[in-house]
Image (cartoon, rainbow, N blue to C red; front, side, top):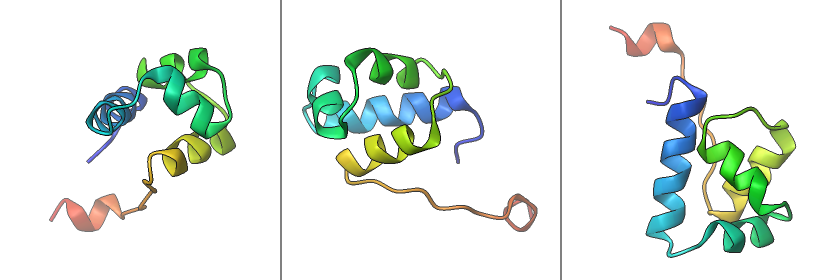
Length: 72
């Protein structure tokens, strides 16, 4: 489970690498700059629409879970 922006950045980096993509490749697919991918992978904040575009470029999505129910 991802509980921080650093966790999310590391997970996206792993997905990107597993897909055989460079940061520049992913940026091009997502319609953003390579520096934006660098920032996301470092755990920095980005606008939500950019994050959704990057996830879509990796053929990934978000699933929201109730933390209270998963703690039991």
